[in-house]
Image 1 (spheres, one colour):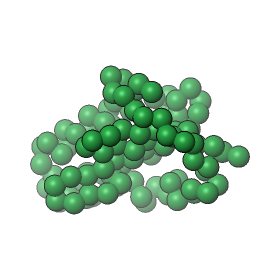
Image 2 (tube, helix red, strand yellow):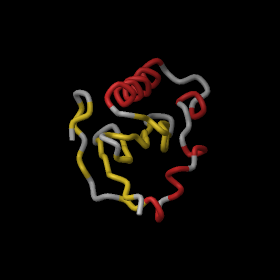
Image 3 (cartoon, helix red, strand yellow):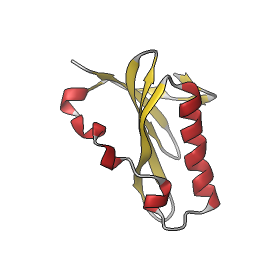
Image 4 (tube, helix red, strand yellow):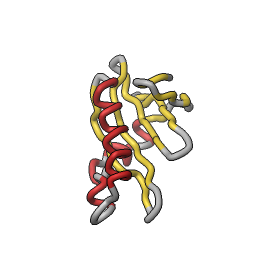
Length: 103
């Protein structure tokens, strides 16, 4: 799936009832919550993906840092695309998206 100009690998759907933790807002940290003084490169990367999702998805319910250390971080988000909930996972080497089954 293409979002903006970025290619995302479609993974198997996930069941919302089995993954309620994904909808815990406390799991979605900003770059500033993770790093006291993030580098401009980290801020640029964080903002690039945030703006890409905001500009190309119907809605962005959650967006933030999933995990991080001193050198790198991963991002995740829950977005709506064509009225379907999707879980987005972004790393330095891959971009993944999964539909969220709400049954």
